[in-house]
Image 1 (cartoon, rainbow, N blue to C red):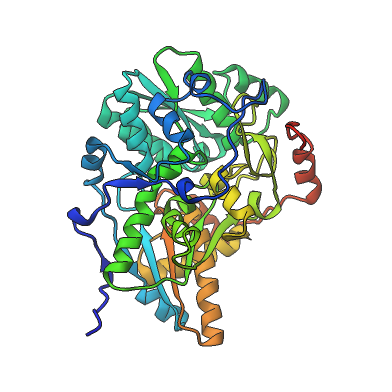
Image 2 (tube, helix red, strand yellow):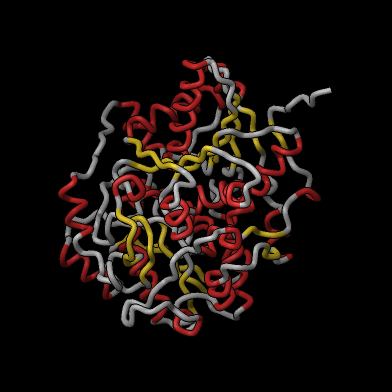
Amino acid sequence: MEKKIPYKIYLTEEEMPSQWYNVRADMKIKPAPLLNPGTGKPLTLEEMQPIFCTELIKQELDNDTKWVDIPQPVLDFYKMFRPSPLVHAEFLEKALGTPAKIFYKFEGNNTSGSHKLNSAIAQAYYAKEQGLKGVTTETGAGQWGTALSMACQYMGIDCKVYMVKCSYEQKPFRREVIRTYGGSIVPSPSDTTQVGRKILAEHPDTTGSLGCAISEAVEVAVTNDGYRYVLGSVLNQVLLHQTIIGLEAQAALKKYDIKPDILIGCTGGGSNLGGFASPFIGEILRGEANYKIIGAEPASCPSFTRGKYAYDFCDTGMICPLAKMYTVGSQFIPSSNHAGGLRFHGMSPILSELYDEGIFEARAYEQTQVFEAAEIFAKAEGILPAPESSHAIRAAIDEALKCKETGEEKTIVFNLSGTGYFDLVAYKQFNDGTMTDVIPSDAVIAEALSKLPKVGNE
């Protein structure tokens, strides 16, 4: 007898994964290494130690260990909000009139409002274990900064956050959550760092970018004893921690013998799609299954769909290591769209390599298209989604409507990575009809790409 699928599928505490999955162990072609911008050679553990926590560096460099034990204190913290539910979106299916089956993994059921807490607590734990005073970081929409301030408070260490200026102004309540949890927060670019002052001198009216904020956070980390820099996306270590999402989703689907056809996540730096899709990508790489996987990005910052696969700086100030990734250029300053967490010029080296190999596809969406999808979802499912997550919703709705046209009963699963209750300025603009779409011209992207660093034969 076929199992009746509940509206919300929960794993038991005992069924929750106790290890993270390292997809690089199953990749035939490994992601290109981070390079020292001074020498052009792969960074060593010793060279990275002034910036990152030692244990996190080891995770960053490890291409071979498939399963990494989650430390018990991190597992204990996870119990506050994990396992998260896999929801059968019955009401959305009905609203769309589609024969498709739609599921979403809901990562917004914690105070930070997003999936970012999965890696924040791991990074805060390793910083505490190393005996550090605190950490520095950047944040776009503020979800990562919120998550990290919570994690640092729990671990008893300091947290310094540089928030992209336009998001700092658009989302005042999220910065107050950061302050409530004891984090300090500065709008970026600022006059508190050398690199911030340089950027302001060159671009006095800039609304900031994640690349700017990264430069400031790294400078503060390397010039203050007892501090290290941590980040919420892009690097291998972060995608590793976020695989808790995909592993739980995989287990929940198997629990009810649900076989997905299409998997979707939004993409800014890669932690969302990388964490959600990696366990399924592992099945593809091992020849065990085949899925259609979609990365949904903003048309205003289209690193996958209009970028170049090349080595680039991870920050605007050009003080960070070089990463080989799909990029629109570290000097590209995106428009101040409301999906602040997706306003990064480059993409995860892991996802960039997999995308280059054709393992998944990418789509770029305009801001108004995304909020149209967010409104449909909110009305149907009763959750106000974050602008970032709504890119995945847009792609899921598009796929479901294709099924409506063809009559195919495909199963679509997407990652609802966060809630949008601090994004009401954006929803107000959408409801008032004042929201606009800004898409960079070919000339603007070409200008930014012309400033890529010269590496090897590139």
